[in-house]
Length: 412
Length: 145
Image (cartoon, rainbow over all chains, first blue to last red; front, side):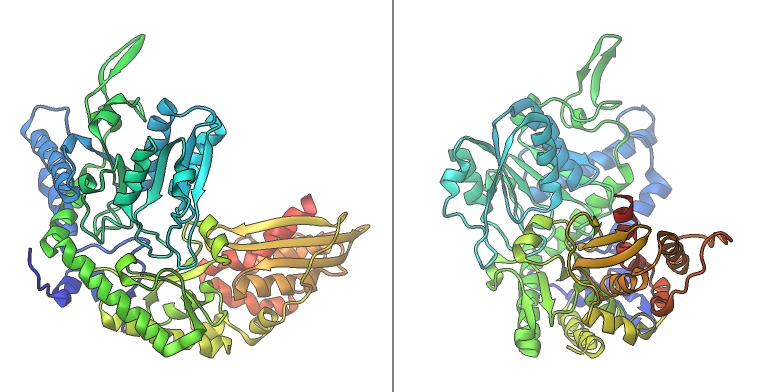
């Protein structure tokens, strides 16, 4: 791994960031929402469609074989990237949301009955809440919640009693609103000590950190390609082989069967069992290229770069605006990712976002698909700036400069 | 690209800073809650009818300058109006927002948008049309309740 990354060269790899709107550059600070794509990913997908596209797993001709190799090659890359024991434990889904739904629907229906307890946290986004609500409505399971500290970290002081008797603990590795990085390994251990499976929603974590599902000792891990410089339309659900083997299928159809008769069917082996129908083939190739791209930079370098940017942005905004800006989440960069949700001079986030857009500064305004957390923060919405590998200090400066415009208009 | 001055007109900012008819009305006033799932804005509209006439209206909730000022101006505009006039006003407003075709309904009473015309600039910022129409959709729902 290379320890000195040329970050300006990284930025230059992303063609959309060369775009000028009204002559001004684009300052993209919405990567927690979805990330931009480098040439390496764009070219890999276009090249595959131009020269190598074909069906997977179902035809004998050369093109089909090559396409299958490309698709399975992407799976192998993902396995290495997250240090999973086996490639066949890596299931391709539509996105992290579908991955969560797969776990709740398949593992949940097979293992949870009335009164069984699933533990979530107050900082989950809707993808790790609603599938469990749906199961609660269907099965009568009970949901318990790990609360937050004032600093926006998980309050683990009563973890033992919250987990007592639980069948599953499903939690985020990093909050998409607060940026908080949670103690994943400790939480997995606590879940196992209580006899619960540990489900890690890692869609904000995997794009920005070294991920090792075996070091975590997790049971399931979910994430999306589109947040890690890969294409939209494909996500990952990793699970332990023994758990996946014991689970019923999720969606039914072609590819997921070993045999179909008039009176029933038998399932295919992993991972096909959970991949009904034609999967996102081109997208898998793009995800594989994204994994290569990030691996080449080095995820430890990514994390260092983002810690530096987070500290720089926190310091810049605080020095410039003092008490006029409230930044949610932990101040310690060791336990926070490059996500800054903030309130500014009482101006509504939607209006902040509109004014920043005048300067081509792209931030998310809204509830970030985490309404329970927003209610705890006492806000209907926040503005959120999130940083990634193609951002630099000048982007944090542009954000700070553009905020002045909001004060001018709203006169607070 | 349209400038922010087209969006944030002074009259809009005035209604945002000092919203009119804020509050709640007890039953039997009609009531509906509206949400903008895009940005988390929440609004509750209360309408008191005296026969066929809107005798009082209150608005509560939180939101951005556009949703709040639109709600404030709407509350002023419909107070004292008949239900037919209110429906015609809702239609005129939605035509201005480019989300309804001009019905050219000769039977409908003639209504003027007045201050509400300040919101015309919103059309140039399509993402914000949902902010401007939130209160209006909630009003329609309240009248149906």
